[in-house]
Image 1: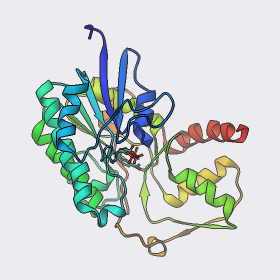
Image 2 (image 1 turned 135 degrees about the vertical axis):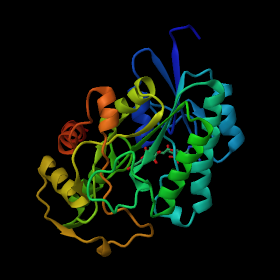
Image 3 (image 1 turned 90 degrees about the vertical axis):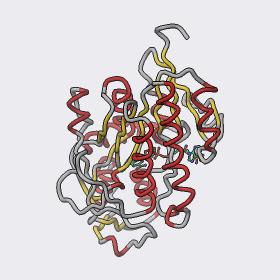
Image 4 (image 1 turned 135 degrees about the horizontal axis):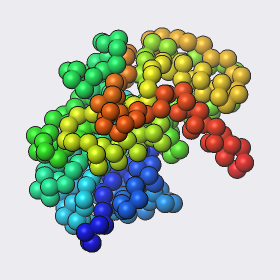
Length: 304
Ligand SMILES: NC(=O)c1ccc[n+]([C@@H]2O[C@H](COP(=O)([O-])OP(=O)(O)OC[C@H]3O[C@@H](n4cnc5c(N)ncnc54)[C@H](OP(=O)(O)O)[C@@H]3O)[C@@H](O)[C@H]2O)c1
């Protein structure tokens, strides 16, 4: 590797966020994507390396065998929030043990590690955006496993680790809420959406560059990165339909009307000012970001 060449390992390259990270690698950086199975998704964000996060030996080998790397962005995770309630052991193996092993490998190689984490580490009892100094207190297995991953990685690589928590993701790839709302609005006469859970919808188009900056420009530490402002799922559905010009009526309702296996924080907006100050800019306000994503996306799908 020449002195100027930078190779960064990006895990979860077939996922919603990991694929965008691969596409948005800064100039001069070669992103080496990994996922459970090599070769997915097809296209420019393909995962070059396949490995299973549940296999600690494979995770340990990853950095050495496919390196040298100048950094790692760990986006892969067990993300099935409801299923995690009955797959606790698997969720912890992927979300807590794998980050520990990866962090140890990054410490040994003395390279920075960005660990992507979640608003689900909070219990939702606040009514103003969560600060990085607020004490986590997860309410479900997924949040517990991600918090355990933060702590495990911190133990192994305090000098290398940038933990970046985010929330309510959507983007060009994968299944997400705005896409589901548009599909349901085409299938049904009216929709009901919960209005008593509040957060900050965040597009991967805004988040991916912030994570690259966290790797390159932020000192080791804990950060939040979400689009600015806050809204309920109902507000997000309403905005999605308005931007798309869809007139299907949508009614607000309470969480009790859609019972799910995993509890959710009722309020989980994140204060992203610390990383925003380092970057010299915040992620866009959520509605503006939604419009920037949806307008070209709708134009593209209407052409195809
Ligand atoms: N989505 C959100 O709203 C949200 C909110 C806050 C934080 N986050 C965090 O953001 C990150 C990215 O989330 P995302 O929504 O992009 O997730 P995603 O689309 O579910 O992608 C996760 C990726 O991890 C891979 N993966 C899962 N288990 C694996 C294993 N055992 N070995 C190797 N790879 C494995 C998945 O591969 P397969 O597809 O083959 O399973 C998938 O490509 C995660 O750390 C998540 O916790 C997400």
